[in-house]
Amino acid sequence: MKPTPVGNAYEQLIAELTPRYGAGEARSIARIVFEDVFETRNPTKMELNADQEKRFLDIRDRLISGEPLQYILGQADFFGLKFNVTPAVLIPRQETEELVAWALDWLKKNGMQSPKALDVGLGSGCIGITLQAKFRALQLFGIEKSPEALAIATENAESLLGEKPWHFVCADITDPAAWHNFPGLDLIISNPPYIPISEKKLIPEHVLEHEPTLALFVDDADPLLFYRVVAQFALQKLNPGGALFFECNEFNATDVVALLGQMGFAVELRPDLSGADRMVTARILNGQRPN
Image (tube, rainbow, N blue to C red; front, side, top):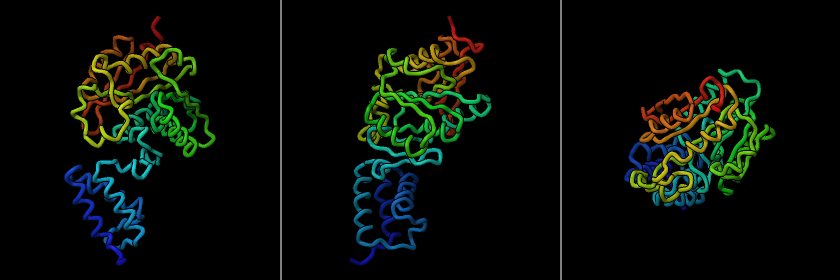
């Protein structure tokens, strides 16, 4: 079989993905395919052999069908680290990197010698594992309801953290019986399910068809469920001077702020780089838990 010029395949892939993703995103996906799979940064200077062309056609067909590239490759980049991902976990996103950066900045400024942090709803583990990888003195804890997701988080912790101390639990944070698994904490961080089921129509088709609904959606009757439960947990477990960090839905971020304020927290809301209100931090007023 005559080798296929990569440049032709590259431009073909962009053209075929553009109707679904738009030109910019299609070009970004194609670049990642050729950099990560075929290890070339200059597609116009390489030819695909028969095996490579077979691999390319498989990836192309799956991408055209709407399957996310990260699931096809089995990995996703996050904060300079590579995480294993499967359809059991959400694909790590840039907005969440901003939340992690804020939490890291807080850790560095706080001056604690060996802070304890809990990642609520681990998924791939990208939030908590990144915090510990970047802040070596951190003691990491995690809680995840899905056994399949917990297995992925554990794989990522083993490969990225090695012998660093971490402790993950398979449990539901909404069940107070699970709370005894954790000591007093200095940082609690979570990207909880926050999309009301009624907003499904706003979610891209490829997300709905492939990413876990358990990690995305919350019942319309109680859209702030996880914020309230995690805040109640924080009132019991957060050490004086500690902080709670949340990613939130830009459409109800002010409701999250109001809820946390009513529960006795001092709250700060920040926009992400696109200007959407997506990040919240909360501290117990005067560093003391309410009676």
